[in-house]
Length: 152
Image 1 (cartoon, rainbow, N blue to C red):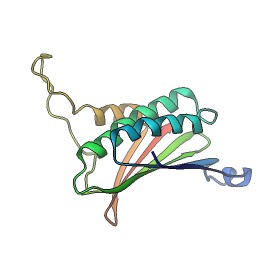
Image 2: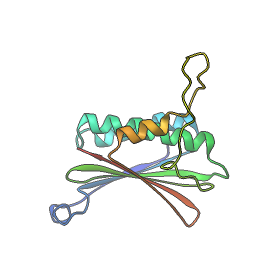
Image 3: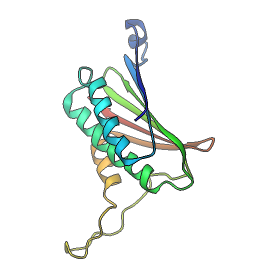
Image 4: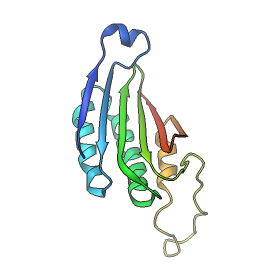
């Protein structure tokens, strides 16, 4: 996974609307790094966030990070994830260099009626939409930026 760090804010910052705490993670572009990232994120956030919000965020990040690692075109460098604990939410930002791809507008292909005819994949982004309260995208200076919010 690389490294992660925690930055704790003081009470004045939290009252001013700034996050109470912030964690930054660097994830290498390999599938095994996602498991290490999930373990590090759980360790960092387990006392700061409700378990249900943490689990929803973990599932969503697993789906999105897997998509980046497996499918991002012209990808370069590691994936950076920042998680901020606001008073009422977990706000997460994923940044990575790759060809522009907006997951918030992606639509899955029509579902088949039989299991035998169903293609594997294509449901992860729909799962993220169902788990997160906010799901946004921008492309800034050659960098894909995905923002998630889970209220808690």
